[in-house]
Amino acid sequence: MKLYIADAFTDKLFGGNPAGVVIFEDGEDFPAAETMRKTAAELRYSETAFIKQLSEKEFNIRYFTPADEVDLCGHATIASFSCLLDAGLVKDGEDYINHTLAGTLNIGIKDGFIMMDMAVPEYIGTISAEADLRELYDIMGLPYAPVEAKDVYDEEIQLLPMMISTGLPDIIMPVQTRCDLEEISPDFERLTELSKRYNVVGVHAFTLDAADETIRAHCRNFAPLYDIDEEAATGTSNGALTYYLYKNDILKTGNSSAFVQGEAMDRPSRILSWLDEAGKNSDADVCVRVGGSAIILAKGTILL
Picture 1 (cartoon, rainbow, N blue to C red):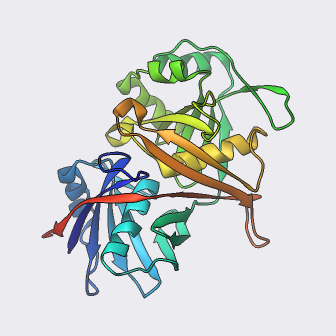
Picture 2: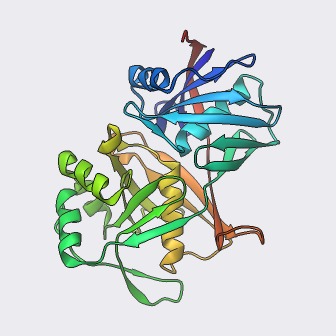
């Protein structure tokens, strides 16, 4: 079995979000789930991907945090297909299919850039009661204050936290400024309990107070329920953020967005997303894709 370590959503070594990638060769099957979880815990990255090739164009990828298996992981998918490219199992300029617990997703590779479908966007609910808002922001180390923005019609709107999934459910939590984002300091024990109560992976905080016009939002992501205090780049969460912006009339279909994450961890990441109208056979009104590059840090073999 081949083992890779790759930094995803970056074009610089030691930037982005690192992931372990294990590639099973010659028809090898997955080992027991607990073996894969323990391997992920040993590697100590937020996620490790385990890849089985099904055919020339199809792969089955399973994703493990140190604590548990998850349905999908964006940055580990970007890392996986970059490693498959290095291993000669996929080709640049081609499209592939990734079978995951979140569904069957399309993957495209162009000039080393990996583009991946997100799962069908799902709006789960809005946190709107004042007591619940104060609890959430207090857990994140901030006083609650209404967050305002302008929609595509140039009208002032108030942004509220929403629970959204494009593969994994998160609380998408707005803050007003980059200073507010930097000041977030969660109570991880309380955040773990809150995540259990809302049945989400964690909190994806963002601000539209962008450093320049090429950036849609700056983000931070916290998932202590899965032994991830903070994550430097999260494809699924930024896919959910893309849908959040659409739900709040801040983003229209046919547009792309660049999200910057990992600055507080000194691992700057750049995640690109695309929002398009869904096809006629889709259950959703829109489809979300997320993309980025990855840099391979190390490769070798692993004995399982």
